[in-house]
Image (cartoon, rainbow, N blue to C red):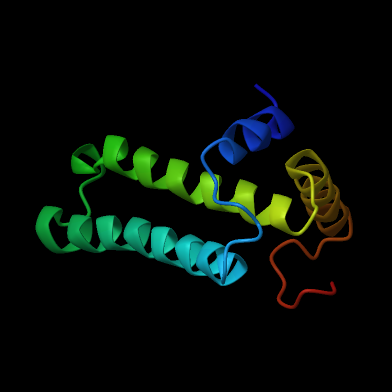
Amino acid sequence: MDLDDYQRGALRTAASRDKKNELLHLVLGLVGESGEIAEKFKKWVRDCDSDESRLDRAGIAKELGDVLWYVATLADYLDLSLDDIAAANLAKLASRQNRGVLSGSGDDR
């Protein structure tokens, strides 16, 4: 499955763009699901002493799926293609690596 295929599939379960506050709903949903991933890791540190063999990979995969859904639907709301976003991101990172600034700071490096 490519990313645009996923995006089209995700949209089958998305609310209409016309729904009141849908853009805000998508942004807050993305932040919330990202926070749920952080929460899984917090509990892993607290309860499992950061033992990687006890990491809840299945639970994290579910939350990553939710993040992916929100990214896909938010991108569509903004008329952006996931394939295009992914390709641009890889090109940006490759450029930073080639210039030796991959681990630097700032957006415009």
